[in-house]
Image (cartoon, rainbow, N blue to C red; front, side, top):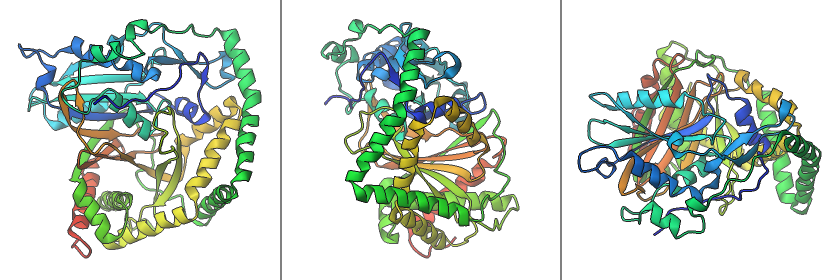
Length: 486
C-alpha cells in the first residue's frame, strides 16, 4: 500500500485566507503559533549496525515524500507595509537539513526529560524566511525508542490537515519501498522540482490591491449562493444569534488564577486510555466521545482550582472547542477550515454524572442551534475585512476575556503507521497557547488508543499534574459506569 497523500497546487500567487493569516499576525516570542506533536517510534530501524542514528537516511526519507505535500517547500512573503495578506511562494533556498534535525537526551532519558525537551523545542518560533515546519528526532530514550517532535505552523494547517501532513510522511506498513524509489516512480520526482521565482514587491503590491478589491465581492458571491440553500442560511444566521445571546446572558467573564499572560516556558503531559473502553463508556452514558473528553477536562480544572482554594467559581468557565468544517473528501485542502463552539465547563459540580450531563446538554444545545454554522459564516466574513484592519483586531485575542482553555478533538487513523520501517507507538497532539490562554487539551485517537495532550504555561500552571490527574481519574470513573464514586 502507498502512503496517505495530500497536496495542493503550486500557483505562484497563493494568498492565505484571513483565518490562516491571523495565526501569523498573533504570533510572538511568548506565543508561537505552530501546532505540534510528540511521537514515539521503535528505535532499532533508525540505527545502523554500529548503533548510530541514521540521520542522512531519515532526511532522505522525508525528502522523498515532499512531492506529496507541496506546501512543505513553500515560504511566506508579504507586501511592503503589510497592505495585503501574506502569500505562499516556493522557497528557492530549500534545504532539508534545516527542517529535519537530531537531538540527544542525556541519561536516563525518561519521559519527564523528553516532555521538557519537547516543550523547549515547541517554544522556539519557526523561521519565516523558510517553510514553516520542523521535525526534531530525539535519540537517547531509556527504552531505546526514538521520539519525533513535529512543528508545523497553524497558518498552514488545522488539526485535520496536520494529521494528513504527518501521515504523508508515514507508511501503512513496515515494508514500504524506500522513499527514493517511491519518488522516482511518481510524477513529483524530487530532482525535477524547480521552484518558481518569488514575486517582487511591485508584483506583491499589485496583487494585494487586486485581492483587496476582489475579496469583498467573492465573499458576497459566496453569501448570495446561500440564498439557493435557505436551510443552510437560516441555520447559520440562527447560530450567530444564539451564540451572541448565550454570551450576552452569561455571567462571564469568569476570573481565576488561570487568567494571566503566558510566559516563555511550557509544560507537556499526556493521558492515554483504550479507545474501546471510551467508546463503551460513551455508549453506556449515551453521550459522544467529545462529551467524555470535555467532562474530563472540567474535572481536571475543578481539581486544579479546588487545590488553589478558588471553588466555587460561581459560573462555568468557557472552553473554546474548534469544529472542523472540512468536507468529508476535503483532506487534500490545506489551511484552516474550522468553526468554533464555546462550551461551559461545569467545574462547580461535584458528581461526574452531573458534570457529564451538563456537558451533554451544552453540546446538544449548540448542535440544535447550529452555532458551528454561525461561527463558520463569521469566519468566512473575515475574508472581506482589509488585511491591515484584521491584523490589528486579531491581536485582541491575547486579551480576550471569555475563554479559559482550548479543547480540540482530532480523529487519527485506527491502524498503526510506520516511519521507514519503524512503528509509531504513541503520538501526543499539541495545541499552541494564545496570550492569556494558559491551558490547551488536544485529543487524538490512534491505533486503538486515545491520547489527551495537555500543554500549559509553566508559570500559570506549576500544578499541571493536579489538572492531569483530575482528567485521568474522571475518565476512569466514566469508564466504570454511571454512579461510580468520585
